[in-house]
Length: 394
Image 1 (tube, rainbow, N blue to C red):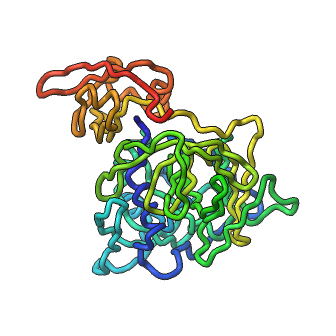
Image 2 (cartoon, one colour; image 1 turned 30 degrees about the horizontal axis):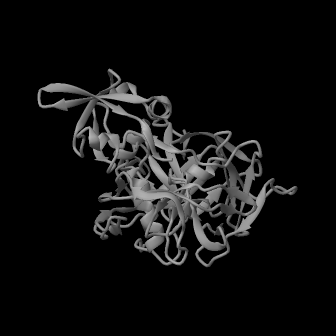
Image 3 (tube, rainbow, N blue to C red; image 1 turned 135 degrees about the vertical axis):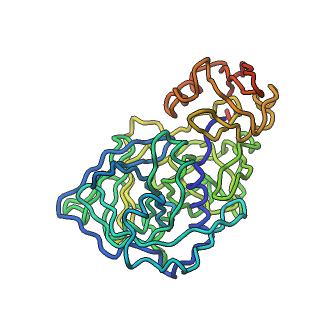
């Protein structure tokens, strides 16, 4: 098993769901948004089903940001905060925000107001943010991440996440001739993208969470979902203050999103809000219109919405350039049978240093290989183990 939520993103899901962030009652948004009448199109990369957009507005860029519609806050790196902190920021003696992560621990994050964040021709000024070290997230994506842009940042623009064409489009308003796709309302007092979703003959509310790499996370309370397989113990999920266990399974019923049917998807079991993550969203062009409280889903009918089996050795990692540290081995997996456990260090994959393995290349290996050779650091020695790749969730 190789897919795991990046640290910051898993923590943000908790921030959104639990209301543990307490800057003020209304979700923070920029003091001023400046965008012309023409649409702003930004190239992006879809990495592990998560959108990472690139922007350059000064000599220090380019900057890379994760767009996370499941987050009610914007997080920025200490470097970006130091470069663009506004005089309107809270005084240094103002207590930091106490943030609870999904595994129950707490972290203290400093509040700032940024002079600006600029995405192409769209400029957001006086942006409330929290300062967070994005180093682990950068290692996960193999690109320096400078921040995570939460949903309220885009309150005054029409935001389109075009996963199939790897681009983000920002508009000042809906075009006069409308938008293609099917509209679903998310009308609620907090202006959060919670939409109705059906599972078989039951309905539940799901958060549209572009910051999650999963397909679906489902809270079984009041739904009692049926599973075709599992749920079984999955890999550890990273949070702001540590790892927590997870459970994965394949649902026995169809999930219906508007008129779109997702047949028996792989789902994570959660005790937080149910959500639709990048594993589903990546099949769509998704447009959010916060003024009218609706989201548009456009889908190419030739693209099947089925979620593939989860393949892997059972290992999940924390990555650094020099080595990959095993975060955990899925119970009953080939990795556990091979005696690999949390804390083991991997220096090579199939004989090549881990630094030569970026995320897409490693994903491709897991999708096609029957076995993977991992070289582990054991004291001053290296030892290679050949571990089978299997369908962990068929």
